[in-house]
Length: 425
Image (cartoon, rainbow, N blue to C red; front, side, top):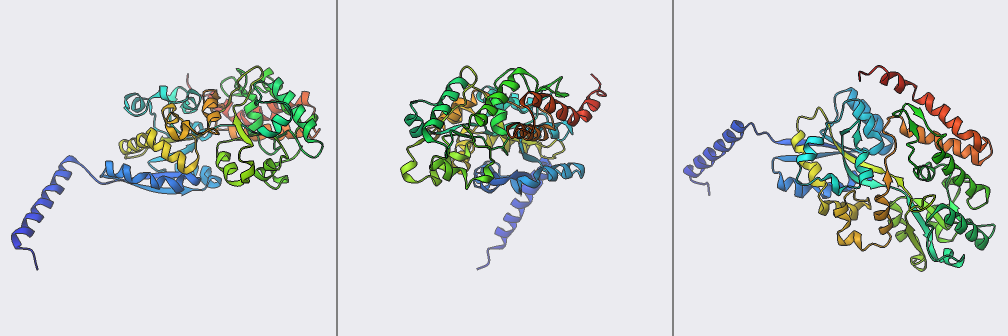
């Protein structure tokens, strides 16, 4: 049956009134363009229906970028004025995009937000987003390094607790090596990874770069002490001089006791639970990194959410940043990805507070330190890893390594010095 004509007329009139009201208020449907990388892009769509329900005039369009191509894609999009409305950025990329003027300052929005409170975030990770005193991003998840260890082997070597200082760690590694014999080792420091040495290097007041990021500072005693501790593990036979590509995989070798200590990130909680055999599940645990004389620092890595300066939908983009920062949303995001939340209130929720393997990360996050906020940082740490490997293999004397690193890093920062020297005060 066709509806009566008067019904059609009433519906048409109502529709016209709605359109007129929206036009009068200047309302238009908003489509937010949101760029993300890796696994996060695959799962975030599961979190968005509730956001769109709360914000019926907003729809979110996700574009997934592979990590290997994301940096180039971002720079190309900036050059072509084609960046999205908001984006996931690795924390070490924030300074580069900030220097280009691509990122919206967020101090005013964060200061007036009822959801985002600076004092609820771990200080070290919050500071990675403050570039030249300006807040350019909101931490989304944290990546830091702690110790994974075989507590059964450590107990057999005579210790009932993980190391609490570098001296104690050295004693434990010596005892473990004596216990496991010549075919196995106390620790795995993969020579193709810079992260373990970087974490050891963050135990002092130095920032690894000097003069506002204009020059290397690897001759600082804190770095030379960290390098000496790192190299000692190889010289004493506690660590094999090999990369992680020279073993079958870290999970299998950890399970069979090829090494007892391993410095790694949060994703390996899920991997060890999945890959270790049932009879080994009670044999491993995590612990915060020790420092030279007590609890140690670690790196403040991870990703942040940024709003693009030229976005035409900054208010809607900020609403999405606030939504993804809610503790309940972060808890679900952690369940989907294993990524660590950057807020203390999220860690108080039961699923995280009751996880024995995550507890060490919660402790460590109170002592994370941001790395220097310079665009060249990823190149710098790669050079640090190359020089450290040459020291371990005997190609560079350990006493010459800091000067060699300073020389290489100073060459990388030459353009930065030139640019900063021409900036007005």
